Image (cartoon, rainbow, N blue to C red; front, side, top):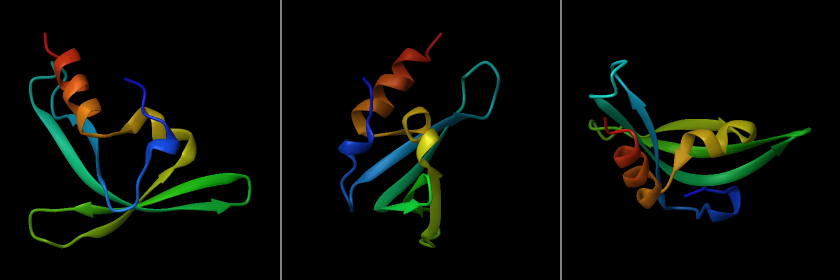
Length: 86
């Protein structure tokens, strides 16, 4: 499932999936709430709030050129978790 910029909805949750190990056994899921899109010169920035367990939601920015490779919605997260299973 390809996730595109036009699919972002302000206030919705999105995710970045990383792994803590090379064998892809320990997923690390970063939860983000989309806030806004910002045009800066020739580049686009996507502004999120990072959701943390301590309730301190800090700003998090993704450059437009990295959005599609990093950020997924919930169905995309589930798909990536399933695809990465050995």
